[in-house]
Structure formats: structure tokens, C-alpha cells
Length: 300
Image 1 (spheres, rainbow, N blue to C red):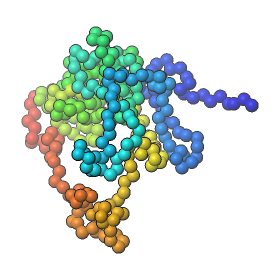
Image 2: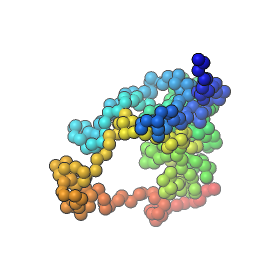
Image 3: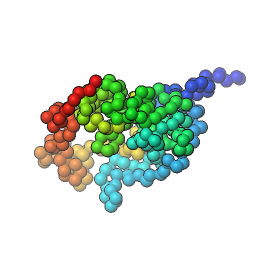
Image 4: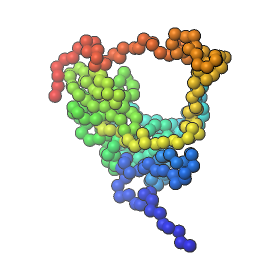
């Protein structure tokens, strides 16, 4: 009996390797409880054949919810799979971080894809976060004026209304780094720029802050459905247990006949510290605190 030939997308030859066609969202054919809602990554054979940079990869031992002294501070962390950490060039320098896109890789530690760049002048390889529209063979650079996606420059040298990511705030590139996210430049002044973050909050950032042009890749990451609790454990996340469901020895909210208030004015942690109605830190550069920022000449 001849088997029916199934035409899968990864069996086709791709003439153009981009950050959009190397990963697809797929489902399983089974109807069991762990498969009927499952949506996972199906990687193209191009990614499966890739070899990561050994000089930019290291193994990082997980903390498992404990401090350096071994004290347990989080009950909901477990080991999960062992993962190798890829070192990413967050801060990019003009004379070092430029070159051609060699290949696009999957990163187990972050939601977006990685792009491996080769600098032919220095014979240097490094990783950056892949942007939507990246193609193997394209050229990225760090200049005074960002024109193409993936180019890095200061916010002052990027046009108003353009999507940006990997923003340098307080000397740490920690803004807009997740899959499919981006920030938008709304206004530019000589000393500050008004930027709308992915959370829709607006902040005044120093004009010399570095950012990268474009929207991050793998925007379909939000469509993934793990379908069962066991698959979350593979990623190092244990199930959460409510404090009111515990015994008094395990949590301040535990014990009592039926549902009780717990004897506290507000919700507390397992160690008795309040978790709600706390005074929040005022954001330094938030647009609501307009009086804290002295704006100079406006730029177009």
C-alpha cells in the first residue's frame, strides 16, 4: 500500500532565507489532552543545520529560586531543560559591530530570533537580535544615521515615527527586547526625545541614548500554547499554589474554617511582607512628570 505524500513546508527549498520564514506555528494531529490545544514552533531545516558560535556560548547554572547563600526565595522555579546562553551584543560600537548577516538562529533563552553577523575587516563574529525583514546576506552597521532595519544609532539620528528597539536607558539596553515589540519616537529635542514604549507609556529619554531601527522578529511568539502544565515545567516554571490553600505553617494566609481574611490588613508574602498598597517609585523620565525635564530646542 502506497503512503500518501505529505507536502510539508520545511521540505521545500527556500530561495530567500529571512527572519519570517524560518519558523512556523504548527499543531499536533493527536486529540489527547496534551495535544489538542498545543501550538509550537516548527523550525525550518536551515535552522536545524545551523551551528552556534562556540566563542559566544556558555552554560549558566540556574539559581532554582535560591539566593547565593542557598536561601529559598521562590517556590515556583525548577531546573527544566539545560540551555546554553548566547551572548548578545546589546551595546554596539561603530568600528566593531557591523558586517553581513551570516545566518538566523533560534535562541532558547529569548523569545525573538538571533542574527549572526560577520565583520570581514576584523574577522569577528557576533550576535544581535533579529529584526523583521532581515535576510541572509544583508548588511547592518552602526552609524550616525540609521536608514535600514537593523542599523543602530542614537535616538536623535533616527526619524520621527520610526519603530525602534533595544533602547539604552541608564546604560543598560533593556527597553523593547521581546519578540515582536517596538517603541516609537514621537518628538525630538536637542537634549531629550519623547518615546512611546511597548507598554504605551511615554517617557523622555536622553537624546544620546542608543537604539536600533526596526521591529523585532518572531511576532507570532504570542500564539504559542503549551497545552499542559508539564510543558511549563520543562521551561523551569512550577505550578503556583495560592496562600489561602496552604496550612498556617506554610503561609500567613493559610488555615481557618472556610475562607478567612487572614488577620492582615493587606495581602502578604510567605514571609509576612505586604505585597499590595505599597508606595511606588516615581519614574524619573515619565511624560506625566513633565516638570522634572527641562526641554530645549525642538528638532524636526
